[in-house]
Amino acid sequence: MKIKELIKRDPGFQYVIDNMEFMSGAGRRRMLETDFMTQADALEAEWKRLDVVDRTIRTRGSSRPYIDLRHCLMQLHDLQGTLAALSVHTPLNEVELFEIKNLAHLAGKARTALAELGLDGVLPMPDLDEVFAMLDPDRTGVVNFYIYDTYDPRLAPLRRELKALQEHDGDAARIGALLAEQDDIQQEVCSLLSDMLARYSQPLATALEQMAYTDFLLAKATLGQQWNLTRPRLDDHVCYRQLFNPRLRDRNEKAGLRYQPVDISIGSGVTLVTGANMAGKTVLLKSIGTAQLMVQCGMYAPALWAETMVFDDVVASIGDEQNEMNGLSSYASEIIKISDILRRSRSEMLLVLVDEPARTTNPVEGKALVQALISLMETATSVTLITTHYGQLGSRCRRLRVKGFVEGMADVPLTPQNINRFIDYSLTEDQSDNVPHEALRIASILGCDEQLIALAQENINH
Image (cartoon, rainbow, N blue to C red; front, top):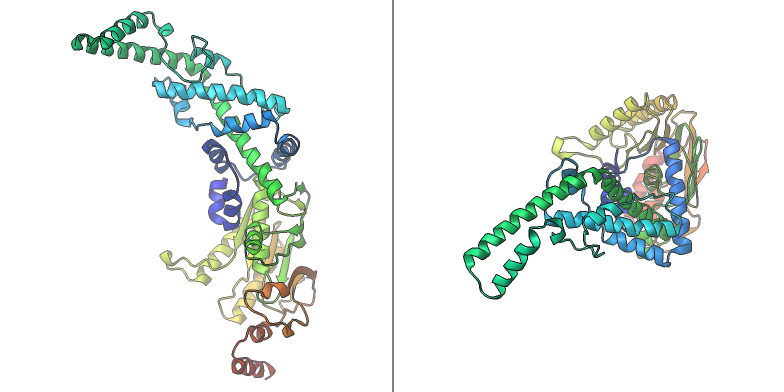
């Protein structure tokens, strides 16, 4: 699974990617082609490289070599097509040869800058001086490319004659013939150069990818500093201190609203999360999912402290997944997703996030389905987090409860705009097998019709 596919599944992860600052199209392409890493050694190696780049930016972010490196990346063009054509000896035109020369030039400057920054061991760049020299036979040192007279002895006298005729309004037929001859020679030179350069197609491709990867690493490190992300550690559980959801935190800050990070630690088996409506249970699941995608794509984590496991995938059933085009109801879509999760959990190590399962069907069958889901996932090796409003489930799984509304808040004017000021989103252990009953209280505080609330309370009392 690549990032370009993961962002379609997780809007929070899409927000993270959209906030990364790339200096080249090649860097963004390299990011989109990055795999969700499922090997611990690959993740550790990526974080070590990111650590080095992060320290470099912090200590030498205003230095000349770092500025030169960024400037090189800003000028980088993504030449995948040109390099693919070169590798099979397809003749390149003058524009494509210029692109090759420019890549060789940028790789040389980047190579120097990386060495001066002490990053050449982390980001080795191939030496393409021979390529540049081949495309700069007169040793001008300029990046512009031209079919120099040096390439073919016929060019110099032909061009002298052509210039003289053009300056003195010479014979048009002769000028046309000379132009045609010059064009033929230049095509021959392009073909010859293309054949000579073909043996450098792999070093050129390596240079392009290494510069694109450098751009990606710089973007990850810069985002980590801007958002105060933290370097994760690998362990046998998932533990976040001060976990935050980047998209929600930024939205709240822009609106002048409070944002509360949360602490959570979960391990193998099932953890059940309960809490009042509007208490942030769904946001919790989304935050954990986005954080795990970031971590396993080699990024730092959105938390003050992070320990996590390596999963084969992050799978979620969150929110209304109704697919009207396929004629599926919310319930049908949810059940198909949960069935797929159960099938995969028998052979894969998954991080499973399920929000309010069976909430759209009748309570008796819904509760039975949740009980069955918990029983089956308890026997799997995956780590499962389930939110629910169902109580008395009879399961021995671990339970957490969102603390919810602050006591005494009823005396404070409450609106949909300020309600989050009065909610404590932190989690507490709760083995009572009960769920909070605060729906009527919340409705009352929000100014719901008093007669409706009174009748509802009577129904509960009876």
